Length: 126
Image (tube, rainbow, N blue to C red; front, side, top):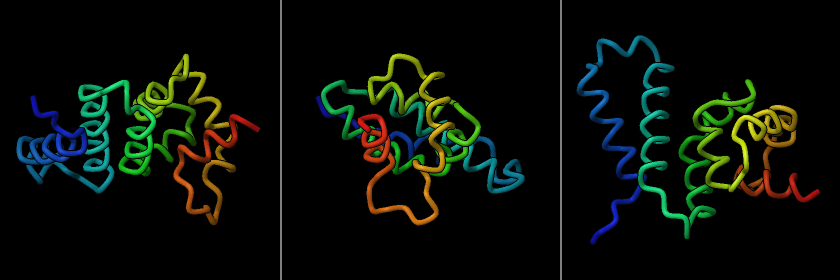
């Protein structure tokens, strides 16, 4: 059986949401970002494979970077919960609160080339 990549599912869901809702309903760029973000989160949860969660976490953090940054600042959300799940965190809410406390280290003004997941792992080990 061919496994559909979560990114392909996210793109299809975002496109379908745009077609169904119609462009007239997208009042500003945040509406589209939220729709695409929700579609991406759903796609990763549905298409989840426990053997490649860490790689999926990297991909997810990259594809949902705008939403994750916003949710990390507020201390949680559906994307933070999905990332917590991919990283094996026991509780998404606690993970979101941890991200909020470490926001400056996770999102520095001049980030290194490292992916958000790499910065999370480094901070949790220190």
